[in-house]
Length: 124
Image 1 (cartoon, rainbow, N blue to C red):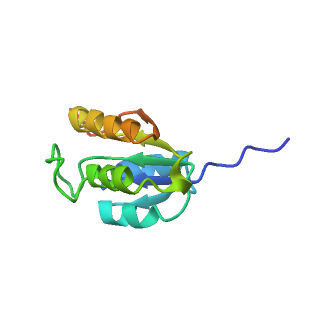
Image 2: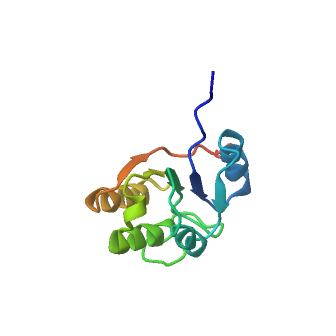
């Protein structure tokens, strides 16, 4: 019996604890910590891309900043790379308002996406 191959996965998040937990489930995933690193990786095809909004150790950042997950979404909306049309995007940010905005832009741009908040162990 053959195993289904692991999806080619890209994970954007700045927190090592979440990355460690994600990589436990997806050991072959590529982990990036910044929006610029993520955008650079979008040159490759991916089966799944999981995006956080708040980066740089901050929470509830302005979505207009270039150093957040929304910058990746803006890039995707403008560039619409053909090789990512079948990619499933997962927004895992705990910043629900920003996550909803990210989902709306992704959907309006024709991408498949879902919201799955990444529950952190360190939350009160």
